[in-house]
Length: 291
Image (tube, rainbow, N blue to C red; front, side, top):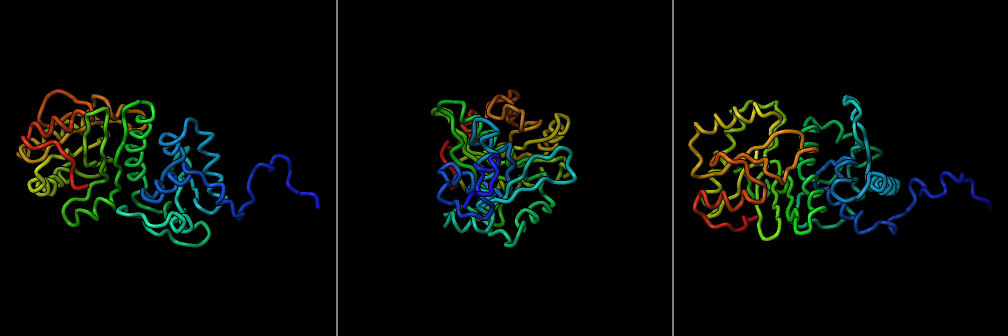
């Protein structure tokens, strides 16, 4: 019987067809990233894993046809990117997730995408994931650089219940130098005194850790950064917890570069140099956190 598929559609898998045998190792990595970090855009996936957007979109299309991802575009956003979420089928396929925190998405047609699109924190989550995906992109262009750890808000909260709840935890390495950090991503909607109040929990945690993990605040504007530094100076926590700030759009900023302004020195530092500098400031060993 002759096929009724047109030449234009000949290379595309039929929707609903079982094409899991076409899933590559990179597809599996992409699925794990989406599942753990809840929502990733096509641009973020391109930055993290692909050399060009067309290849990322093609793999997203294959995963979508396999029922492993769902996609949506937020209607309230002008020229929105394509957002990707993992389905319950994908989470089951991935199997045990160890010490990450993968949530089982709702089942039903487009249920995962609908739930993600209705998240009140969607813009904040997009910004957090943009930050880490840009570090993955930077690592792909630097021979000795790597984002060795990227833990989500939920994975980090499991390890430090009721103490701190950062937006993420990371370990960035460049050659022999490295820096672990907690990320607090600010969208500008929260009063600065609430941001500063979060440091009490970090101070309590780090007093017992015998090491130092800087807390990084990513802020929208230089003015907001200046006001936060003035507020932090009055808290007198500089001998317990090290804070560094940077500003701008993480999609275009040089996140690993000398953009980080610590509270303990007037000079901006690179991300990789913050680890040793912060521990040196506090006089504690530079060694990995419990994460």
